[in-house]
Length: 237
Image (tube, rainbow, N blue to C red; front, side, top):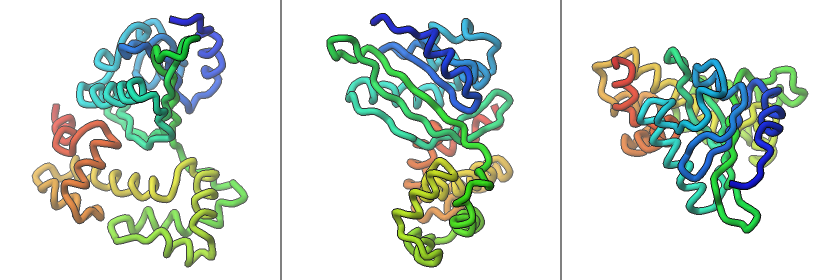
């Protein structure tokens, strides 16, 4: 491993309470983490995580998804940028995050691990000066997620170009209108999977705006690390 000043990196990110920070080696073992990462994992100290991998810390379906994601970044050398994903916290609570991972290289350019961050998506910044420009669009997405929504149509109705709408959304909400739509639909599906255990997954997908069951399952797994059936099973485990 290179001579990384991991303690200084940790200290820098310890000040960010809404961003989890981590450094991993090629085998997925944690070499460095910040305090937010410790809290996310429901542990008391960094020493409880260092040297462990995702399988030691998370439910198997989630851990396998995280490790596959790591493997892709390390094997291809292509960073993962602002990937919207659901994180399951201790006590079965959940929250949405934007995760980024980039390869860690030695002095010769060889990939020896990765560095990543995962930003919690809390409540929107409603005092942001541009919030009112897109508040109605956000409300439309959150309340009518089950419909066939045209983002271009929403931008036109607000008198904005699609690129302008995208930029303002990212500044206010820290993610795009399309990511908000995915989040709204999956939130609704997650609620129904728990509240209605006898309903078919296909029926729930359709209610939440998905006309293709297989597309719903792929997106659900991409964002949560589990298939809808696996998620439902964790609720009764």
